[in-house]
Image (cartoon, chains in turn brown, blue):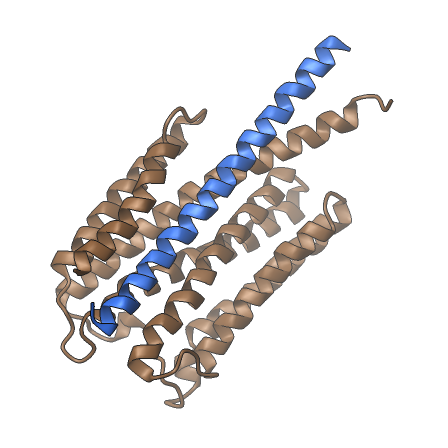
Length: 248
Length: 47
């Protein structure tokens, strides 16, 4: 049964990756799409057949293999937003600004997935969809920070001042990431959330499946960011063309 | 289907659908922008 669920979800994601990989104008994007597809298929097989069913939680524990791998692309997206912000402030090159916007958007998608899959796992295990503990609350705050970043960009589009302000905001926002990561330690036991998987000494099959999920999701992140960047480049080209063309 | 299976199915389905939905959104945006670029080029040539 579990293989059906995982297989179905991954087939859906793989389906679009194959579809998207057709006729890309950038060969690199096709390669990234196919790599992500291969990694997703391997991960799905591992979730269904390689990872054992945990004794205490049963099948529902397998949400772990999709919940935790979403964390890396979310942090990666926000970290890249800060790096691109620094790049923009140093060089005033618009490509950095576009990269910051693309990675923040994809980061928010993955952060939304953390916040969606967490409660689905929490309900059968903790008996609650949500508890206001440090890890959950700080993750929600992180999501709001970058959602506000995207809204800010949407409202203040185009001007150099807006780009400077959003670059600084994107850099400052990453200060929340270490706080979220170490929230379980900072809570000093006053939390239901388990500590970071790296410290838990998972059995080999579990950590291998988790690792495969992380690699697959990072590749999906790379592919989506590249595509979002292609869209941002087209938007910028069109804006330039409309500024060049005579009015009336 | 047991309770655990329902939660598991929901989690994986949400991840699949959100990623699928976002990818379709981005691709549609790229196509729309490409069409606008083509039509503005054609407009420029005609003008």
